[in-house]
Image (cartoon, rainbow, N blue to C red; front, top):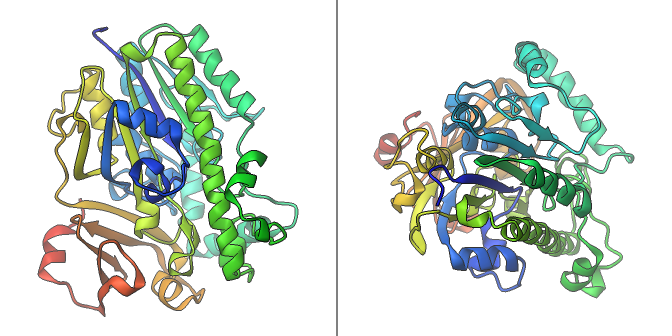
Length: 435
């Protein structure tokens, strides 16, 4: 094996763990992922540090919690030194990114350190431009008066009939980008790929829509994005939510084909033997739990429990049952490449995290009212207020604006042990101090 392995980081965007067949889901949604996990190391209880793309990817790229790296709903651009790409580039790696995700690109600060960044768009904002405008963007998004107006405009745009939400590029385009990189690069290289197919709007390949969606739901309409359900008054009926759930499975199966193509491209070029390959999701997706759709505005299990499988060049454990934080992907890559020694934080150790933490920063929305009562109320004082969680694998604590909720896992409204304002249990006080 090479002294410095190639590194391939594949983010399976918006994939919740309980819908991946490798974890026991009753439908075969992910044969390519399952095969990879069977051959290499499957992590049974991986926990993301955030519930949407920017902070979750920022934690993967920096090893930090959202409260530390600061790329949140309030400051939606990554500004950090020593990201994965910058560290690997300084160590002699060629660095490449393929990300059609509109929130993970140079324009949001994720381009630093990459030699090439393919977005699927004809216009790519250079990283230096993003860095220059970031302070102004943060001032705008951090001012409650300006933020509320921007929120109204953004909601109106998302709810418009013309808008269909984030769309994934075609399989052909994605494959051409990845294969172009693999054909031209020199080893060692770092390749980051974001696969977006399971993100709204639901747009699976027709063959998988036919295979996963019941015939009696064919005429049922579903919303294109979560804001139409959350803020637009288009609350989905039970049958519509059932179709949305089945379409999610079809999207997941579509994504798995893309993953299979990517892994096949590596294998056909005999690159797997010299590569550290990590498959992980940034966050999951609500499909009706707590009345929610999409993945923002919550830190429940549907959005923070994610799949994770790793091929370690020097071999690793078959399965790891302990809970682990996905931010440790950062430390794992730097340790395995010899750039920064972090054996205790590397996932290759098989060690778990006694407490897994994360948060979502409120965009002025009263998340207590929203989650429990279904009402949408804005309060400028709540801008940036963290909806934070800590879990020990059996019990989960959630905290927001002085109110705390405690759940047994697996979590549901019925599993809520307590919901109380202004009281901090000893267990929560010990385990949720800000990192």
